[in-house]
Image (cartoon, rainbow, N blue to C red; front, top):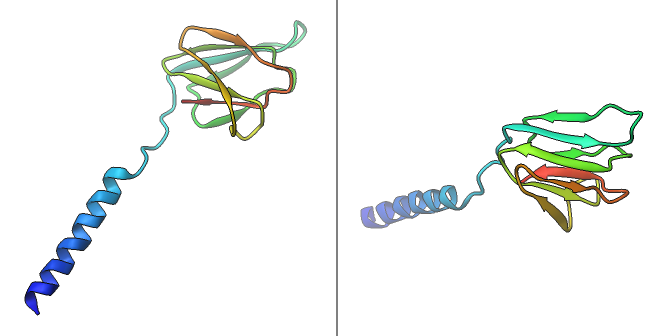
Amino acid sequence: MRHRARLAALTVVLASATAALLAPLPAQAATGQVVVFQVEPLPLEIYNDPGGCTKLPVAAHVLNNQTDQVVRIYGDPFCFGSSVAVQPGYGSHVPAGSGSFSVA
């Protein structure tokens, strides 16, 4: 009886440790800025130390990644589906109607 109780306790401990090791790491905020150009009459949109999913302005035209991490541009406002990766120090035209960006 004692052997089974110890075995059950060990199984619980191992299962918990395995779950903790396999759990995804939380997304880290990038250090730096994402700068979005819209049109000439509007000021630049500047996102300092962005993290998670951020909705782009409707008139977004160019995204410049001045952070230390990859930024992904998505066609919807919820960061789902296919995306375009923008490496640190690079920029990308934002397709009309693009909805969001996230730190990868």
